[in-house]
Image (tube, rainbow, N blue to C red):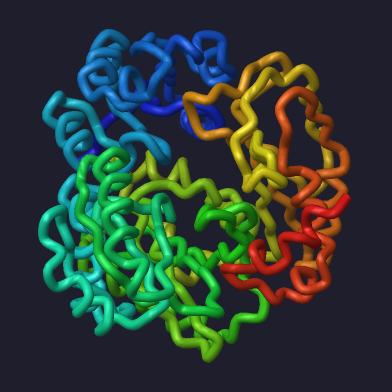
Length: 457
């Protein structure tokens, strides 16, 4: 059923809010920004057609408040709500509240969000769809660790402790031996309770060496789905991505095709609606295993947009509006060239990537560079605060091949000027010229392995 979306409230901030505003403008849809005390003069607020204050600077009092966001949508007379990524984007209860309040939710169904948000349940659903999964345990709650040692022995060491309600690599903990297990599980449970409101954790086999590769998907909500190729996401620090690229270098076409087939099978089974990503870990022999499914737009979606020419946010909004998108078929989706995305953070790599908030006294990004795209939510004079993620900007480079994209990215990073907070730009420059990275020999512990070389001046 068609739903005329004339005005969308963006339940987010920063770079992704600015990104959503751009797509809404293309579709002639008005936008409503929300902002906390800390974000009153932020870039996303100035770009939107109108704005609504939703609370104090702490996210729990503003960007994580169901009631304040929905009330803001009512005051603005919005038709729909787009959650972006992070914050409430994978909160099924928030999606329900949005729908019950009479707004269009730009995303998959609340039940799908719940299914994939519970990592234990997601593993079972993936298995039911024929997707390979790693050996793992069922959920462990506080006070129920009686069979922990037995479960760990069955999974095998090294292993990962994961929050059942977590995602995006947040809070993962590696355990190499039995003597570390119980203490680390208790710490992980405490973190999960604070971060996700659910202390449940589970164990999963840790693969090393491994690559982290994800498949970008789009589901139509009726069992149909298409994939938009893969992204290599192995360059990480503390299990958080720093650099992504598409296509993945040195990946056998047969492995790529099998991963895409497995991911689309899961999407079809779930009758998934909208943009989503299925993430895999790939071992040295090319065997791949399900990690999780993200039921939202990804930070790294721009790399896929650069090789396909598609606007993923626009597709989200059009589907939510009732557009059947009949022209979006697998044969119609083609990839051209190579794209690399680097995330510029306000952080200090020499101090284990500790966040470095501060005022951007100088912020000059390269302008009008062919093949370079800059996504940001900041301007010179803005402040990176300790309240939110320290992402300053994303730089996406596209070239005819990987070497050309790398050269463009290097040039683009060299033309940045940022003063105020410390940044990881120097670290990224070192990474891009490292011989093993240039050769495409990426793996999830790349940064840890070559840290000393990447930090040299």
